Image 1: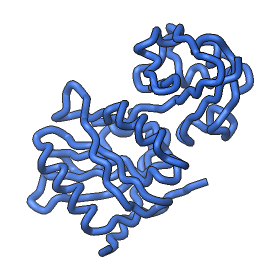
Image 2 (image 1 turned 180 degrees about the vertical axis):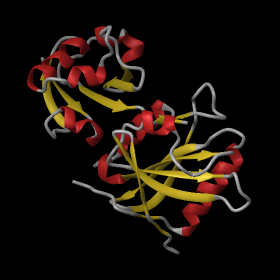
Image 3 (image 1 turned 135 degrees about the horizontal axis):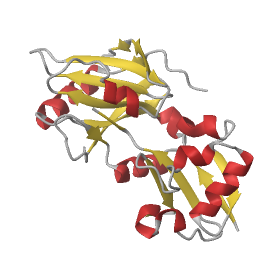
Image 4 (image 1 turned 120 degrees about the horizontal axis):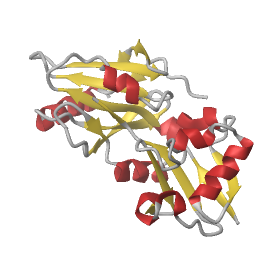
Length: 91
Length: 139
């Protein structure tokens, strides 16, 4: 089930310089794992030690915030666009 | 690849940043400086949704996603991320350095600790801070 994953240049070091990828998976967890197989270390940038989305990373499936749809268990419909966006924060 | 060694900030937009900082005080303000490459053309004021806004900021994730979606090339159009320090210098705090995740963008800080607000720009990468010049265009 191919989906398009878009991310900003801020994460390109984790994807070999790519900011738009085609990945597959029925859930967000599967999609992240698929990218991690090609770009080892990607998952650790997005997921914490417990396998949940990091607090300072936001993921959208289409217009929807993945956190509102089960986090990494969220379903990713075929053909949808997934956006991975680091938060902007500080003190 | 974009490597911002300076930013060009029209005076009117610099004044808008300072106005935003003053309006938000004692909380920190935050937002995006959008444009092209190193030139700022627009200030996008964002909501500071952090639970402790007087000492911390977090740009509203929904506003950030909206800006990302709307951009043809977000890395090119996102010139800088800005926020204010109502009582401390216009220099990245330890929290700013620890939480910086956008190494291609500049970070602009506005300080209100003195009567004439200070505005400085930096790049932050892997916790390392490098000041970059702000060219204050008049138009």
